Image (cartoon, rainbow, N blue to C red; front, top):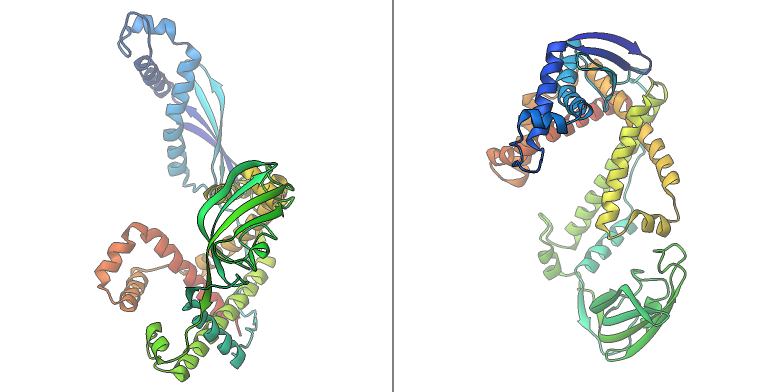
Length: 425
C-alpha cells in the first residue's frame, strides 16, 4: 500500500493511502458476496439469488460503500504499524478517490500532544500543619453515638428529628401526578428530602392523624410540576424518635474497634483518625498546588479533537448518572437551572485542566523512568493480602480481571510520591 505521510500542527499526522488495485478488487468482491448474501428477490431464498440476477439488484455505489468499510480497519492498522504511530484520539477518514480500479483514503491521526516541561523539582510547596482540637474529638464521638441510635415509637407529637411513617397522595389541580404517591414511607423531619415546606407541616401531628400538606414546587423543578401548587393528603401511621445509647462499656464493645476498650482509648482512636484525615487532606492540597505550578509552567498544546473526545466522555458519564436518578437531561437542566451550552463550557474547562495535568504527569514519568515493575505489583498485592488477612493468590485472582487498571493506579501513585518527595516541604 502506497502512502504519503504529512506532519501537521498540534501533533496531527495526515496519511494518504492508495490501496493496490488487486486488493481493492478483492474488497469489492467480498462486498458483493456479503450484499448478495442478504439479498431478497422474489422467487429465490435469501442468500440463494444467482450471481447474474444479484448483479442487477445491487448497485455499484452500495458495493463501493461496503468495500470501503471492509478496507478501513486493515489499512489503518497497517499505517499505525509501519509508521509506528500511537493515536491519542479517534481518527477521522475521508475517501479522496474511488473507482472500480482505485481507492484512496486520507487518515487524520491525532497523536499524543508534545509536552515541554518547566521546572518540576524543588518547588518547595509548604504543606499545612495540622492538629486536632478536643472539640473535634467530642463531635466525632457524638456522631458515632448518633449512628448507633435506635428508633423508638413515641405517643406524642412529631418533632424535627423524629421519623414519621405515613402514606401520601399528591395532586395538582385535583389530579394525581406521577411519583406523588407512596405507602408506609419513612421520612425524617428536618432532613429536607421533600419539597420545601412539606416536612414542617407534619411537625406537631400524631400517629393516626390525617394531614393535608400544601406546597408550591420550586421553579427549578421538573417542567410538568415547576412552580405549581400541590396538595398532599397524608395518613400518619407511626411517629418514631431517636434514642441515643449511653457511651458506656456495652456500646464501646459493640463498636468492635481494635484496641478500643474504654472511653479514653476511644478518644485516642478518634484523635488519630481525625489527625490522619487532616494529614491526608493537607498532603493532597499540597500535591494539587505542585501540579498546578508544574502545569502553569509547561507548554502543552492540546488538539481540539482530543478535548472534544474528553468532553464527550464526560457528557456520557453525566447522562448515565442522570438516567440512574430517573431523570431526563431536560429535567436535569430544569431542576439545576443550567443549560446544555453552559454545562459543555464548564466541561471543556475541566477537561482541558485534567488533560494538561495528566499529560505533564506522564511526561515526568517518562523522563524519570517511573515505570511499575512486577516487583511493585507483587509488593502491593502482598500488602493487600496482609491487610485483609487472605492468601496473596486470592488477591491475584480478584485483581486478575482488573490488572491493567490496578497497574495504572500504582503508576499514578508512584508519580505522585515522586512529586511529593521532590516538591513538598
